[in-house]
Amino acid sequence: MNSNEIRQDAFHGTALSNALSIVKEGFRKSRGILGTGAYFDLENDQSSRFRLARLLTEETKVIIQAEIDLGTVLDLDDKEINEKFRQFQKILNQRFGTEIPRQLGRGWQYDEFLSEYRLNPDTLRKRISGFDTIAVRSVERICILSIKDLEGREIKWQP
Image (cartoon, rainbow, N blue to C red; front, side, top):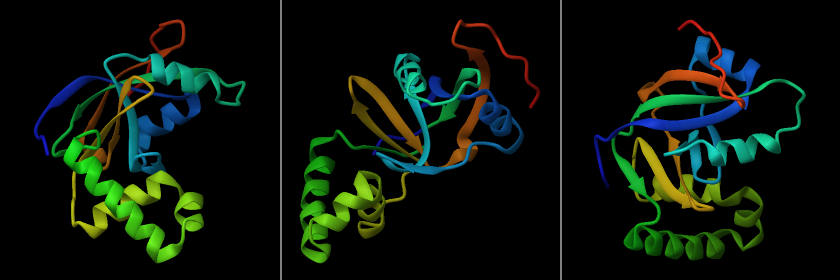
């Protein structure tokens, strides 16, 4: 596990009303493909833009740029971690059959994996569709730097 990297190139795409809620209340964790966390793409906002294109809303879509103290990072692309996870998936299939883990999804499997091996990373990282994606489990490590619409115009906000 890596630790103590601070990134200012973390991007999260969402609807404007969600972004304003995040400013007031902070990021909420949700379960996604990497388990429970607040999701960001690193290095550029292209993947966030792609996801926003599929968001079914007429509302203004925005990109939040954040600074994140990644803390302890579990790299899910690490060969050893990946092999351990694959073995754990086999255990889940033995316990529950193949249908339940498939229905509950990869995110549930990662959450169970972390629990089973008593791993408590602040952040999970995995390369997905050519982009570094992170799930920040310790949301207090996130600081909003800017909010912009898809044309790059700054959205005014107050912390």
